[in-house]
Length: 84
Image (cartoon, rainbow, N blue to C red):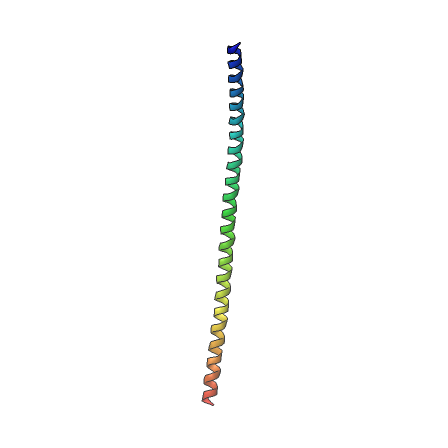
């Protein structure tokens, strides 16, 4: 009878172990998917940031060019008024 009792305990332990192993596999799969999703989001974020930086640099270059042109025009006007 004690042998039967120990066998039942062992069976319960094995059942619990199998359940835990299955749960571990499930959680590993979920973790792997989350890591993949996280990495994709990081890459997308970097891509968007780089696009924004390029757009800002382009706008800065354009505005700087406009300002330089206005300065040259004002310098010409100043010289012209000085020569009068």
